[in-house]
Image 1 (cartoon, one colour):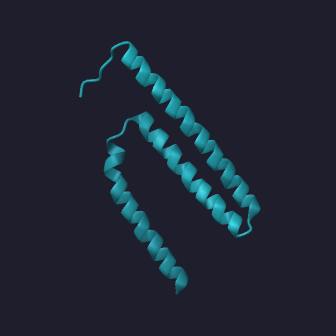
Image 2 (cartoon, helix red, strand yellow):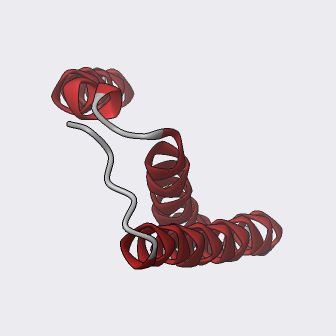
Image 3 (spheres, one colour):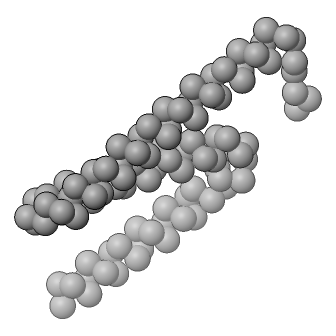
Length: 98
């Protein structure tokens, strides 16, 4: 009974997040989407790593922690690249028509 309630709660939460975040996903550029995906994957993998660590599954926690660190690095790399692009556009006077 408890497991079914937990599964139902996770399903409702996933449906809510999908409907809440869907409009924002369409309004983003490709680089912004990739950057946000890496951030979200890093957060999720870090949370799962902590959960696995609390359950005593250290191998799973290490793998998930490594995945979170990799996603964090990719996020930072994309954030810096996006900043470089913005600075170059500003420097050379490029303006996108909106």
